[in-house]
Length: 76
View (cartoon, helix red, strand yellow):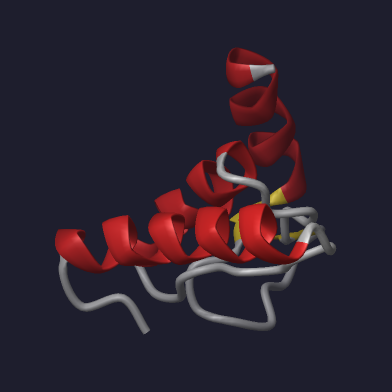
């Protein structure tokens, strides 16, 4: 559960280090309102999965699929 902005930096850094060091698929994300952004930023650091929901989220911080598509298109 992401409690403060600096937690996001830690998640991104850990994602990059794991991916760069082990060269294996990695899945990371932060949860909660502040953690929502990590569902996008971690993909820029090597995360292999972006979680979204199609109507009813199953975890805090999940973004609706249709919104996620628009966000991802901005970056990729």
